[in-house]
Image 1: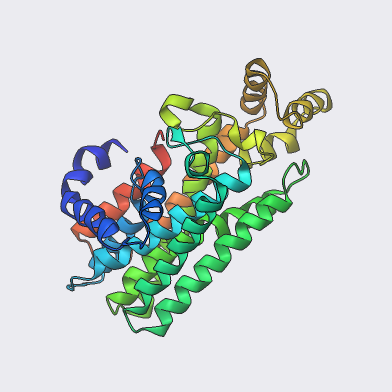
Image 2: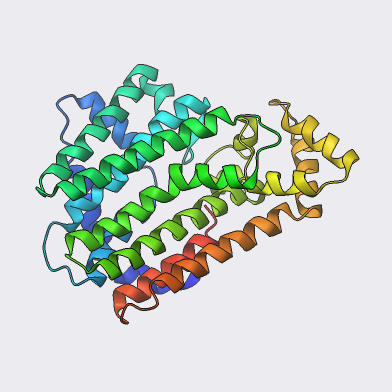
Amino acid sequence: MTDFIKDGLALVEDDLAGIEIALEQNLTPYLEVVRKTARHIMFSGGKRLRPLLMVLSARICGYKGDYDKTFSVIFEYLHTASLLHDDLVDEATVRRGKPVANSIYGNSIAVLVGDFLLARVLSIASRTGRMRIIKAIAEITENMSQGEIHQLINKGKLDLSEEEYMEVIRRKTAVLIEGACRTGAIIAGASEKKEKALAGYGLNIGLAFQMADDLLDYISDTKVLGKEIGADLKEGKLTLPVIHALQNTEPQDRALMEKIITNDNFSNQDFKKLKDLLKTYKGLDYTRSRAKFHIKAAIDSIAPIGNSQSKDLLLMLAEYVLTRKM
């Protein structure tokens, strides 16, 4: 993270500025309430990881056009739409340190603005005239929706397996990042080999990103993280730190963990006890090790691609995903 924050941001400053402009220019709703609702979450501190990865993936494949920033907003719009819908489903109260959009504009508006963004995504994709890209975006959206549904079905499931968890995060998080990297290669007209390498990078970055995010729920604090600590647990989401610890606990400690997990109004003291048990039974360490595994897989995936500044930035971003604090 320190290398990317210190050195990388300066190198992508113009790219990030171009992405911000494109996000505004391509929103253009008919109704002002749509703009306000979308902007409430879209311009409240997002990292722009997904559009930046698309731009860098296109550049590493030799893209010289001027459509990359415009097309990259697809992945931020998709992400924003999913957050608007997720906050409703999860009954969340805070997102990025601010009240969730539906608490200000209402549930119906939040849902419909999410739908607007999904439609705008396909509208932008259609400008390429390339059916393969439109199909890829549609498949990403389908996967994200099914990932969230799968997670909802698993709500409160104490015997959730690591395999099921991995399938959920692959669909709801990783496919979007994989798609951003793959699409960058496609618009650059890259070889199948390069496209596959960048897709592999994106998929593994996405898996590691979600694992790191799940860790933050137990090692960060509300002010830094921008959302309520323990929110995943209160929403009935069992993530990898808890899944691994539950599978390795002594019976007495497992009973205590289950008591805390099944109480959606657990106290701060209970949450501290749970975090102590996650440390004792290596839930946090195991999750960190699995995230490191996928970061290495991401780096290995693009190893055959020739050296360039864009490749260096992709490598820095891989390390950032693992060590970020928010």
